[in-house]
Image 1: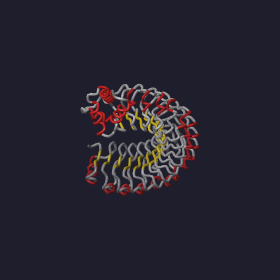
Image 2: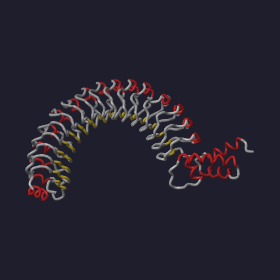
Image 3: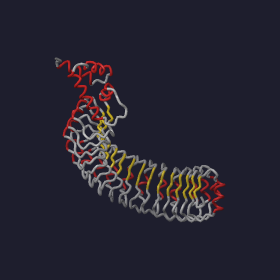
Image 4: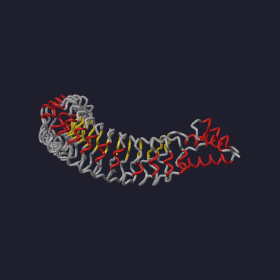
Length: 445
């Protein structure tokens, strides 16, 4: 009869990451029913987890796979996690994404060294209480499940650095969210959140907060306490205003505010001096906020689909700006202030009411893309020929009767769209001679 110490030695060999030890365990089990039963049980765990393995593996290969510190069991059509998952005691990373799980076994809590758990894309509504025993957990992905509340069993997981909850049915966050002080990344997009608890301000290590596509109507003042935040996405909500405390987020590099109901911005925005990208399209801005013009680190400013008619002279202070999107506003004259931003590479002014372009547009010699479609332009200035880096020029749906000969200086132009203008076939033929290497889209294609 085998004593306990012999069995423990056998199991130590069986669960080893050393291939030689695994082979020795298989040899020891030969002719010993009790040991062979242990191996058979272990192999049943493999069969339960890897339902879609295309290549047949030997018993040795299956055991070797189970003994890894990282297991990818994504997309295996697993509907039930066996209790014997607890045998994988060396697991540091477990990916169970894109399966059919509706519940988790309590034995998940026995994976005491687990640092990363991915449950994305299942059908989970609850978590077992034992999830709270995973005190080493640093990354938890619960996105695209069916959670309606953030569950109390998660409260002890204070080592969490990344938490993904996007694509659930959350209507509120619990006040205890503030205990996750190690969190650097928090994804909450595509839920039904209407408010945020004040305790959100206690996440003082947070670097990324994504709240895209919720139902937020207000934003808590406490957000200003997140002074390490670098990326904030609160787009596609119902916000009408922002708190002044947003100006305290001085580490912020990316700010997405598009598709809200903002009519103005707090002056404290001018304090976000590290900001590189700002998305404000799809709001109700009638007046361009002067406070933005001090943000000299901005390289991208997206202001499409608002109701802007003019820009302040101070916009010329945005000396690092490379992309400016003013599509779908109410500009009747070209905002000459834009001509001061000589770093611009992309300028989108389509779907406005422009009737004329000033000669000063020729100052934008770094432009690579210029979009002027869906306006009321009748002529282009000769200075258009100074845009020698231009690669794409869109002029469709205007009232152009001819283009200046200077356009032939645009030797880098790859795409020119002149559909739905008043250009004759002769004019278009002349353009093709001037720009032999350019793809020209016209009414005569």
